[in-house]
Length: 118
Image (cartoon, rainbow, N blue to C red; front, side):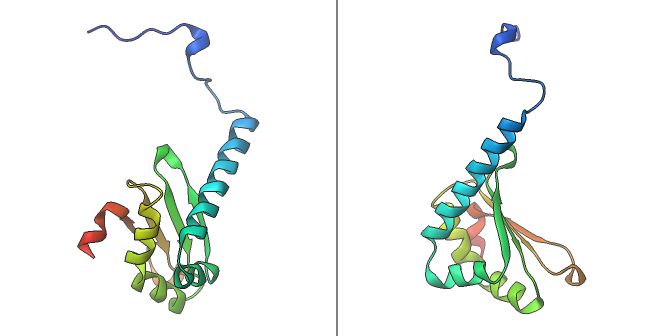
């Protein structure tokens, strides 16, 4: 099978422009807002106690939660299935990364399609 050859006008740019980065940031902000608004009060209060954002790297939405202390890290991890359930409503192939304070070790990561394992 021969590879698909496209005219130069139909190829993606070699480098992303400032406008591309701005549009990606707006999309991530919008997805973050939709996710937060879809969460229940308990999940919203957990998110408020942490720094968090949604990234869209390689087309896979990833909810990144940075916990400020051991208590908030513990609370987030104990509610990971509820958080994953809310995120799964937006994207079935999303991921969650919970980043503890630096002294507590490495981030915990899971895919939302792994909810049944927890």
